Each structure stands twice: as structure tokens, then as C-alpha cells.
Length: 297
Length: 225
Ligand SMILES: NC(=O)c1ccc[n+]([C@@H]2O[C@H](COP(=O)([O-])OP(=O)(O)OC[C@H]3O[C@@H](n4cnc5c(N)ncnc54)[C@H](OP(=O)(O)O)[C@@H]3O)[C@@H](O)[C@H]2O)c1
Image (cartoon, protein in one colour):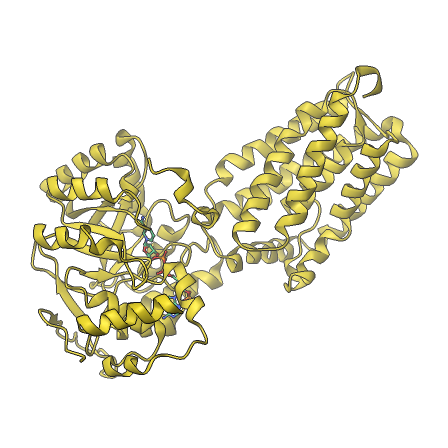
């Protein structure tokens, strides 16, 4: 029933990492072959803590646990209030971890405002350049993609992407994916939101576009709904010890998916989420059972 | 653009309730015991309006205008703006309201307070509710009193008390003085609703009631306003 993840490679353990934590499964970014640990870290709401020093320290602790557990990608956006500044402080406090893969967005309707917004975002993170910049929710996408591709050509950016969520504007996402040389697309996908399976995931696989999965837990609504419900026996077959892990394993078993980016305020959750990216993943049949089980709850 | 119908209220919420309520805890810790002074001043104002309505608008403006500016600066800009970029727009609106309140207080022909009709009594009720029971909503919602919202320190009770007092005024100034407070109540009520806080209802109901009452008052013939 449960099979080990196919077509995935393991990252080497950097020196000094606690052996107790298994290295997360990593997937190749199709446009470069660079390996990416398959669980990243989102920052919507969870990292928007403003000037509250105690909560900022909590976010830094989450980031520390994330890097210690082998995570690379942190995702944010100018839309997320203070999250960018909080990430910047955290990175500084952690001595700017070399493992960081910075995934940011441009979010402004006017194309002419894009470069200034990106500069400000860079300042907040305290990074020289971003690994990935995405056009947030396709807002002003034509002008911003011109900017991002030009930045990439000039060596000021490594990857270009677009984002959507909750199934919005998939028609336009599909058109852009088909026509533009994107490195990444970000969309919502989980056992109960599977619209992306219809066209976007196959297209991403065919075009060699890396897929970032947002809202794996429906912004926590899904995990909250499942709280208290007994974990089905088949979770044990793939080593999932919580609903969150079962959901993440469902997502990561989709071959077109490169990385899922759950957000959390909790160190134990970040560890739990990273741990979902090790051990076996469900096969097709088990994925069907997971989706059916969650749909029925 | 995608139709707005595909968005839910929560899609616009940028922060968690925990972070939001901690803003008030920090504000209260930084300003205590100023709360006692703002609440006493608010109560004194209510008494003044009831006993000596003649000069009450001057004192109302002189008290409320600095409090609106103070809340805008100390809470909206220093704290709330950190988690909600909408405060970049709300804070200037609060400063503008402060100017309007001051103008209403000192300009000849400004509103006179102290009417004794049904609208006025409802306004009095709203003002007293914003001053006294409002801070206790924290306890009723299971939050500690250290997170309470107090008139002159936090925006919602400051705005509700202002609306209540203004409903006791005569003249056309209401049309100028009420829009910003009412818009704030709508914004804040929807924010609380998105956070699934029952407290959204007093804020929205207070604003809804005030809108109806103000409309009634403005619809009256000029001599009876
Ligand atoms: N259009 C876009 O570009 C777009 C749209 C949406 C999201 N995103 C990105 O995708 C990221 C993820 O989406 P999201 O934040 O909306 O939702 P999400 O990751 O599905 O859910 C986050 C919630 O899940 C809870 N959670 C995390 N790990 C858990 C665990 N192991 N067990 C139980 N609960 C857990 C967290 O609560 P705790 O804090 O208690 O752990 C948090 O409230 C965002 O942060 C953002 O970076 C992008």
C-alpha cells in the first residue's frame, strides 16, 4: 500500500544537525534542477505580529526550528502586514541562515510601483536579492512579469512565479503558465480542495514549472475541524502521526508538487510539518482513501 | 478581477485575534492609570451636558478632539498600524475628526448639546455604555481586564461615546461630525466579526442605531433639529 516517495532525492545532512530529525524529502525545481525541501514555511497572519517583542521572539523560534529541521523556503508578501519585517528580524537574529530560500511577492496594481516595492521588501528581509519573486494573485501581472524577467536576466533574481489561491482565476493562471517562461506557480491544494488536479498540476508537470502549495490546512480551518477526530488506522501505514501530517503527505505525494508551505506560530507544529516530508508517502489508492475520509468528516 | 463574491470576510483579516488583543494589553500597560482620568473626564462631560447644556459643546470638543488625536497617534499609528496597513488611512481620518470636533466646539453657530428628546436619550445611553460597561466586554469575552478597551485609550469606546454625545446635539453639524465615527464602527465591527468576536455586535448595532437616529434627526424640520 504505502510506497516510498519515488523520483525524489534526499538532501545531505549539514554538519551539526541533530540526527534525531530526519532530513526532509526534497524535490527538484524543474527549471534548474536545484533541490528544494518539500515543506516550506508560510507567513500569512502567523508572522504579522507587529512590534510585539514576545511574539517576534516566537516567530524567530519557529524559523530557528524550521532551519534546524532542514527547511529552506520561507514565503511572504507585502500584503502580510509586518510579516516581512518580522522575517527580517528573525533572519538577522539567526545569523542569516545559508539554507534560506526567500520567496516573496510583488503586490501592487501599478506596474511602475513594482520595483520600489521590491526594493522595500528586500530592505525588510535584509537580503541582497530574492531567490523567487511571484506576482501576488496576478495583480498587475503583465507589467510585473516584465520587471521580474528583466531582473532575472540581469542576475538580480533567481526565479519568477505567479500565485493564486482558493481556486481563483485558474483560467488566467493556466494561460500564463502556458505562455510565459515561469519557474514557479503557487496555488491552493489539499485533500478537500483538489481543483488544481484538473488542469494546473498536469500543465505544471508538462511545462516544467515548480508548484508551491499554499493553504494546505485551509488556513487552519481544516486542522481545527479535524481536531478530536480519531486518526484513521491507515495513517500509520505511512507514518503519519497527526491529521496535519496526513494532509501534508497527501499533498506531497502528488508528483507535480514541489513544496507545500504551511504557516504556523508553533515550534512543535513546524517540526511536525517538516517531519511529514520524511518516510513513505501514500500511493494513489491510499490518497483516494484519505480524500474520501476527510471529505466525509 | 475575480468577483467579490468569491471572498469571505476572513480573507481580509490580516492578523490573529491573539495579536490584536495583545495590542490593547500593551497599550493599557503603557498608559495606566491614564484610564481613570479619561473615564472620569468622560463621565464629567455627560454630567455637564445634563446639568449645564449651554457650554457643554465647548468642553465636549475640547475633550474629545485631543482624545481622538491621542488615540490615533498612540494606538492606531504606534500599535495597530504595525499589523494593519489600513491604519495609514484611518489615522488621518481620526486627526481630521479631531479638527472637526474642535471646529464644532469653538465656531459660532456650532452644535448645541443637551436636547431632551428620544434620540438624545438614546445617545446618552450609548455614551454611558461606551464609558462604563464597555471595558467589561473583555471579561465577558474571556479576556483578562488587562486587555480591556477604555474610552480615550482605545478607539472603539472612544468612537462610541463620541457618537452618543453627538446624538445629543442640535443643528446640522451631525452630518459633518458623524461620518468618520460611523465608518470606523463599520470597519472595526467587521474586523471583530471576521475574528468571530461576539463583541462585533455591540459595535455594529451601536453604529446602526446611531445612523438611524441621526437620519431621523436630520430629517426633522430645521426648527426642531
Ligand atoms: N495568494 C497567495 O499568494 C497566497 C494565499 C494564501 C496563502 N499563501 C501562502 O501560503 C501560506 C500557507 O497558507 P495559510 O497560512 O493561509 O494557511 P495554512 O498553512 O493552511 O494554515 C495555517 C494554520 O494552520 C495551523 N497549523 C500549522 N501547522 C499545524 C499543525 N501541524 N497542526 C495543526 N495546525 C497547524 C496554524 O496554526 P498554529 O499557528 O497553531 O500552528 C495556522 O493557523 C501562507 O502563510 C502564505 O505564505 C499565499
